[in-house]
Length: 58
Image 1 (cartoon, rainbow, N blue to C red):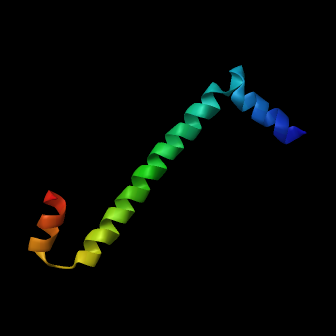
Image 2 (image 1 turned 90 degrees about the vertical axis):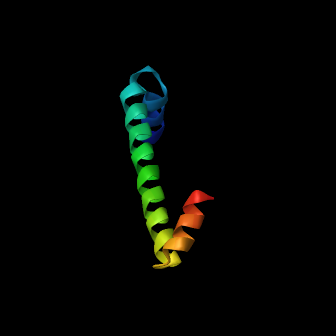
Image 3 (image 1 turned 120 degrees about the horizontal axis):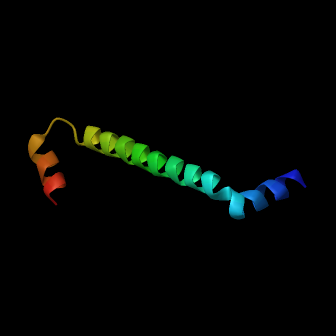
């Protein structure tokens, strides 16, 4: 029952800070994941500057 009361507190009026914290964490998590994905993607293109510029300009 403690889990349900915690969920009710987050979804209720008292949960504003928790919702903001979750959204803030999600925003930075997505930004970090996109940065890692972009780095891995560019690393797979290798040292070919022409290919990298074609991908970035597309």
